[in-house]
Structures are given as C-alpha cells and as structure tokens.
Length: 155
Image (cartoon, rainbow, N blue to C red; front, side, top):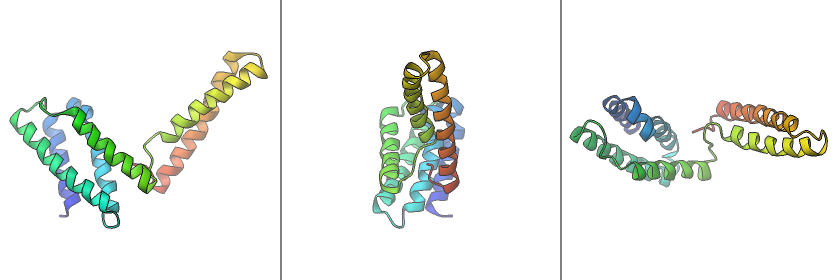
C-alpha cells in the first residue's frame, strides 16, 4: 500500500471517529480529493510532494486530537482550513484545476448582470431580464463544469 492509500485510509478512520457533523465542519471530503490530486502531481511537482508530507503530519495530528477527546473540539479549525486553502490554491494556480461549481458561479453572476442590463434597456422590465440572464448563465456554467469534470480538471 502506498503513501496516498494509507493517508486516505487514515482519513476515512478519522471521519468515522468524528462523525458526520464534525467531518463536514472540517471538510474532510475535500481533504481526500486534495490528497488524491496532490498525489497525482507529486512525481513532477516538488510543491505537491511537500504538501503531501504536510498533509500526512497534519492528519496524524488530527488523529491525536481525536484520540484525546472524541469530539474533535480541540482541533484548530482556522489552521486546518488555511492548510486546505493553501493546497487548493496551489492546485488551481499551478496545475489549472478548478473547484466544483466554479464556472456555474461565474457565469450565473455574469448572466444576471447582462440580464439586468438587457431587462432595463431592451424590454424596460427588470423582473424579466434578470431571471432570463441568470438561467442562460446557469446553463452555460453547468455545461462548462460538466466538461471540466469529464476532462478531470476538477479538484
């Protein structure tokens, strides 16, 4: 069993010990995806290898906290989320990966703003342009998200 598989197994054990609510609070599903994506780039990227090593020590620290008190209350959530954000931003910037729903959020807001302009200028009805622009932006964003997921570009 390699390093990544053992880390994912430890992560699953941590999720089991913490429970659903605390696992969602710590976003352990995202940690598992970041772990897998970092491992896929670890041979070519020294930063990804360093992140993998840091994640391994961080998971061991989390396991120690959980063993001391079974609620996970002593875990520093701010530090944990900053580590997750650091790894996620590296994968986004250096490896051109995106988060789930990235294009949907961008194109929905863009569609709403264009729909607002369209509604005010062409139809003279703000209430009509806004939902039309939002739905068009949502459709385009969902299509681009599906395409990115198919290409394996989603964290």
